[in-house]
Length: 392
Image 1 (cartoon, rainbow, N blue to C red):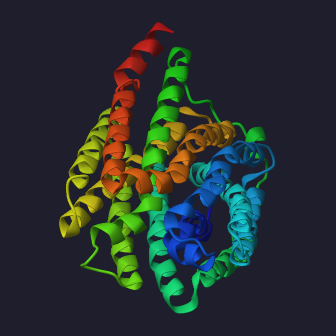
Image 2: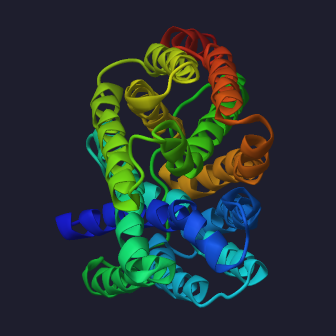
């Protein structure tokens, strides 16, 4: 795969996360435009997008393996762009919800298709996943930055239109640059990854449960941080553009963690590294729940760093234990389960904050992180795998 195609696949990851978070960054302006008194009342209308982001991963992964990953990525670029334009044309909350569902369906393509396409011939898969994760999280930062600027100067609709045009432009470049596939992944079987059958189910369950806890925290933080930032810095910062810059800085710093984790994944065992990061994640949320003002802002950088640092592990486990001929389908199944459950975080965010406040939300996130620690401890270590292989 040439360097330009790799860059386009990483940019696609950035766009995937950017589009899903434009709504969260602009929800205050959207609620006001639609005549709703509180932003919390608008948040449930985006739940469908995250449900489809998860459930759509199963057919997306299957089509990626059986129909071709290059073709599915073309569907991604143009489908995302057109559906974002549809969101910009909505006039009521119900229309918005329907358009976001379509956007979520197209957004489900990237993770089970784009990432396996990127790593299928990578010499350093951990580093490749880390760079890709950095790109995705910079998309989150760009969502905060670009949406804040566009909402303030041009209105919330342009916050969807501008990225839509960029996405379809990149799609044209991808169609011209990406090499054609000689065979679909399902027909181009590589040597199977050798993993004892006794540990396959255990590893898959750990992968799904930890992906679910990580996704819950990811959805709670990325969809709630814009309003949480405004709440915690109330009286200190109120300008939307400045808040957008501060939030983008949090995501940009957090994104660097994926580069560090990516390099470490090529050098050290998965289990101790994963458990250590999840423990720090739990501690960071606990500290953040007890602070406000600029002290909270520093704590927020800490928990975002730990949330982002945990993301590469699910993809790393798929690469390490699953043959390339079926990686898209396995990834799709894992994503469908984890994001199908974690999409409830988006639905519950508004009502939970409205009823109990942000302090309760952060305490809940600390508990979710603790559940992730306990689950990761069940992950087979390298020694367990070697013993099982010797007995097989």
